[in-house]
Length: 247
Ligand SMILES: NC(=O)c1ccc[n+]([C@@H]2O[C@H](COP(=O)([O-])OP(=O)(O)OC[C@H]3O[C@@H](n4cnc5c(N)ncnc54)[C@H](OP(=O)(O)O)[C@@H]3O)[C@@H](O)[C@H]2O)c1
Image (cartoon, rainbow, N blue to C red; front, side, top):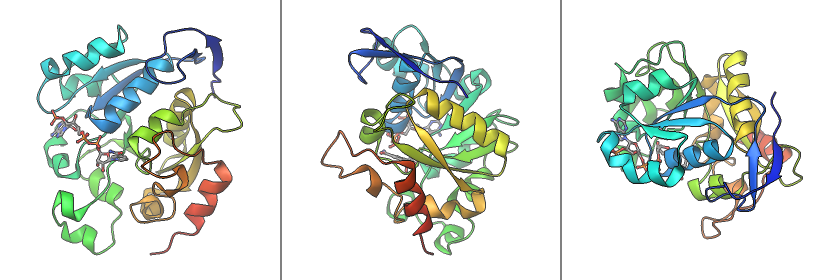
């Protein structure tokens, strides 16, 4: 597991304004979706020393401003190019966009899926209204062969930006991750570590309902939306919230 070391510096892109974090290992992160969560993860990944390839539905030209803001380790590309470039890929699009992703080349990749199901926003999906499968199992149908880890789905994007802390910080926050393969979860945990977060393994995708909307671990541990800085949430807090979830 790589560890971060902190340096005084100015190359920090909105987080930890007086520090630059240098991970032991750097990689390329491919983003399918570059909105609230995608752009925030891109920012954190850059601060963590990674290269980032952004994509969205409208094409790379529409991401020019974000690329300019985030700097030379960030580029914009098509969805397929972002998928192919990323050692880790994050799919962070609305649930309704998943059916358009079936041809994106994600087979064999560790893919973080941030998606949540909100019927009022996404339209009703009868399978999900029944409570089974979990939304991540449902979404996996649209990402054939991808090695899915559900993560970064339970935290408000502004809190995700502002609660990042280096490894060893007393006020580091933790994020639950769910997935069916321990190696995939280890890869995602390593990435989260590099962008300022610890992790709690919440189990396989089948029990990822414990981190879906309206559960105790969903948004609540990181504080009120009205406080953009958020409240640090320890591993113990996240474990207890996951354990308290009911169905
Ligand atoms: N917002 C939060 O705080 C938060 C927190 C945790 C989890 N989530 C979940 O994460 C997901 C993304 O949320 P968000 O708030 O980041 O959404 P958002 O700000 O609306 O951004 C969505 C991104 O997805 C892209 N996109 C849409 N359809 C696409 C397609 N067919 N192919 C490729 N890219 C596509 C959009 O690109 P275009 O603009 O070009 O269409 C945009 O870049 C949702 O499922 C949400 O529930 C959100």
